[in-house]
Image 1 (cartoon, rainbow, N blue to C red):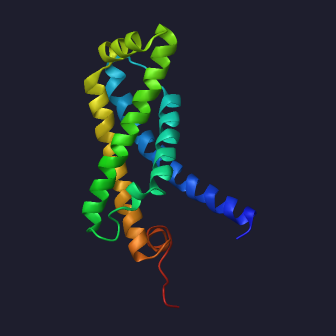
Image 2: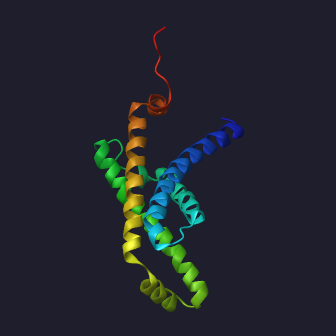
Image 3: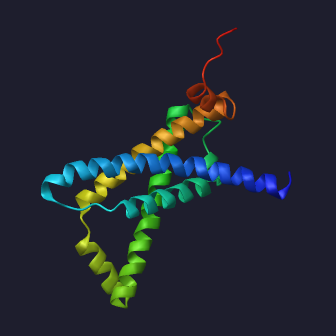
Length: 168
């Protein structure tokens, strides 16, 4: 495979995953806007887009690791999707935690103060809600990807997005 073909393949793979998470997080953004409208709380679309990019990167990287492929051939699709969802959710939590901790460290100058500030300033209910939403999107993604793999790469996408042949 030439470098150009490999690059095209990677762009298509990244674009598909990123678009899926943009869509899911866009739905979450709309729900947040609707729920917070009566309180006149502004919700940022930029953070939602950035989150979708970060999550897509995490998924693409983990899909290439042994943790992402570990039970694909040995477990039922649902069990494999649930396992992957939990692993990916843990990895996402760690990445986002480290990102927030890094920003707090830059603000406070030492790790102890940064950890204390993070711990005290965190809205744990909001965090739990976000983790539930991200977990649901991971589960949907893994079920879709697992079905696509088991049917043959691209077949599920064709079934969902292409018109059926009319036989004429």
